[in-house]
Amino acid sequence: MSLGLAAAFADPAAAREARARLVVDGLNQPVFVATPRGDDRAFVVERGGRIRIVAGGAIKEPPFLDIHDRVDTEREGGLSGLAFPADYAVTGRFYVYYTYGAPGVADRAMESRISAFQAIGPPATASVANAAQEQVLWSLRLPNTIHHGGTIAIRDGDLFLALGDGGGATSETGAYDPDDVAQNELVPLGKLLRFDLAGMAPLTPQLLAKGFRNPFRFSFDAATGDLYVGDVGQDAREEIDVLPAGFATAPGCPALPNFGWDVLEGSICLGPDPPSEPKCSDPCLITPIYEYPHEPVASCRGAVMGGVVYRGAALPDWKGQYLFGDFCSGRVFSLRWTPAGGAQDLVERTAELLRDGGSLAWITSFGEDRNGEVYMTTAGDSLGGRLYRIPEPSRGALAWIAFTALGSLAAATGRRG
Image (cartoon, rainbow, N blue to C red; front, side, top):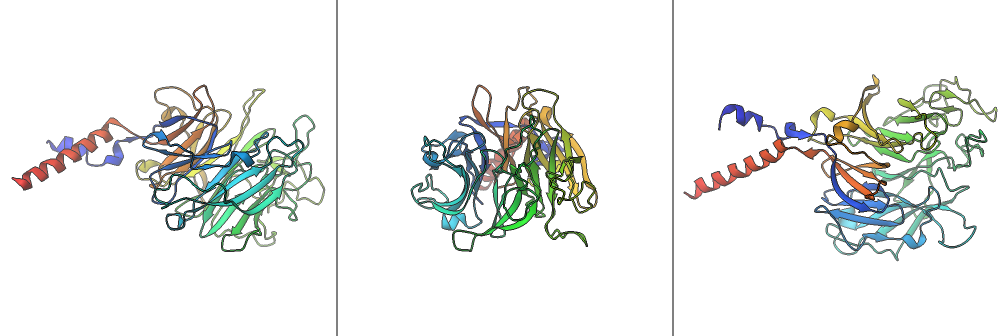
């Protein structure tokens, strides 16, 4: 083999393309995807109340978990969050977040729940969990059927949940957070919450930050611990917020970090209402690292889907970039954020991910596989819900696999001779 050809195959990562590869379609409104540590399978959350295992390019039967009989899917309700602790391979215990309600019962109250379930059999190969044995760790009666967040995440043994303001606002009335909860530290709505999983149920949350409208998707940077939040806007702005690891408020500011809603929508001043809320010019308010305006259309104008900071190995140029999308437009972007430099290098990735055309209908989440590569779920179009993986191996990567396999075969043959 020539030196030039050998050099072309010397780095398999360089032969990868940032392309969205369709893993499976035919899912029923997938809204999240997670993987246990060390597991090659993808666990896809379906809004109606089921978690499906995807392995070997196929959706496995039966569902890993089926709790559709207790999940309320009215408006923004449903099963929306899944988190595996670091010791899942030993304990088989995992956590879900969903809105509870008795199906078919009129005037039922929607309730947010964090619950624990148990896999049946050895966790590394378990194909089903025990739906009958649910441990409800925390619950909250909701004032409305929208703006209740959707993500749970585990870091350093604690579980995190970001709740929205509970809804009730409409563009027609001009109401913003009508119950004034996002700035009210006496209620958990509009807050980032932390739960000590070592505690006894029911768990009591600790408030970590306030001032959110609907932080549907958030994630931790696996390398730094920084928390990235996609907070869905109302009339004009979608925003990305960051709570750095080890964050401390500035001298003279309240101890609880405040991301501004409903005094601000992004950087737009809505004003304090009631007057006891901070003013728009209050230097203690934390402004977004990035915001973008709504599309000038009448229907779905914008809904940011917070993503993940890329920490995989297949796309070296992407390392440290935050990947996120928009539910309405189907567009995907990346940016790089540092405490010193702020947000930089904003790039739209949509065309790059869809080199052969097509569209990403209703992006609902981004996740990570065991190696830090990216999964993405979409919940729309005529083919139903889809699971994608980024990146897709290119012809060069496949050639590298073949090349190394042939090299191993040649070496083995030589040893035998």
